[in-house]
Length: 542
Image 1: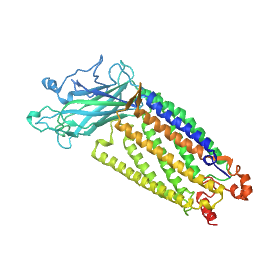
Image 2 (image 1 turned 90 degrees about the vertical axis):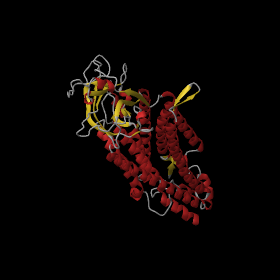
Image 3 (image 1 turned 180 degrees about the horizontal axis):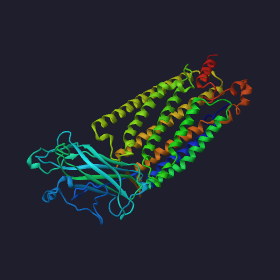
Image 4 (image 1 turned 90 degrees about the horizontal axis):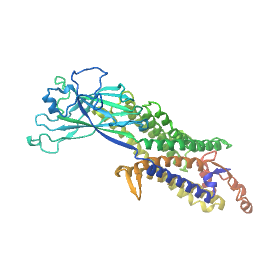
């Protein structure tokens, strides 16, 4: 019978395939490190304090910090006190982007972080558990002289977490608290050129609104968006990899269906892994350049979650199909105890994502971390998913240990076999170990480059070139998983070369040609791998 390509392919050809894959892997890292810019850009903004002289509540009135229709401004709150301007008449205005610049759909998303500059006053200190209440409005336009169109309006609450590092004495009046950054806004698409934020801090002593939050001097924002140059490189990679994985997936399944037996579980799970990889690769992001699709961030998270859940399930099933025990396998129901925690952990992460990015489709100012209940709920989902991940890792290590222990036990029976059969089963063992080493290498590369991207400043200088480490991490790891799935489907597809053809003359001399012709691979046997290794053990005893 025909085996898999990896066991029938000559060593020379196998090395050539490996070198080609390594070259593509190096190229994917170089694309991000040398061609693409940094993945994101952070732009700081200082809110302008505008005066609402008539204290209007009209929704069509917007306060611009600069330009021909700019608002009436004050420098600080001392000036507001001197002019008898109340806090409720002050509007903090922020225009995104900065003057003489434009936003672009290539930026993909816009994340805004907020920080209060709060001065210490002995008679106006920040109370424990202080909550800042903000009346926030977001508008957009595509023409500098056009009218603003409201995009979102919400009353938001953010808990202040500020520390005063020196003693609270009259001598330290005017010093600033050290306040944590606060999540403020996230928009899933940047389909307009100009955005305007108007922020009010309404004060109501009777309802205790914005009482005990200290003396706020300024509001600072940091706008984070994806770089347009990185977006173009990312889209180009997706456009190139989509047909590559799709073609190899169709070719792989065509070879499976040409077999005279139905596909076994391991073949099905490899095909499912290819489908999930194709699902990630399809460059639907191209449409986000021309359409205002705010759900693209959520859709991208769902696609990644499906792929990683399928990848983790594949590792479990692959190890299980090679345990060589007496359990009847080749059925997905056998692995429900192992795959169940993966599905449950993925579901927890999906719920967490829906609780934040799902709500942000209607209210971009919403953040699950803004309240104590939301923070506890988010942490609960993350902890549960983390526990599932730890259990998965421990169980996978246990399964790998069992497989290698069983393989070591079966190797002692190999010397009693004929030479052709012994070499064949040694090839089966090598094939499994080869895939496990590649898998561990991929996982290690992911962890290593993730750590480097966190501790490194973002780029290295190498000779006359600047290497963008974070961009190399994204494109390199993305390319690596594509190559991993590509290699799986290519190397483990059924081979048209039948095992024993090259050894027929040798087998005839020894009288074992019939035995050699019946040899098959682990994943192409009609009864699954367990039956093969049972047969191996019995024949060794005989």
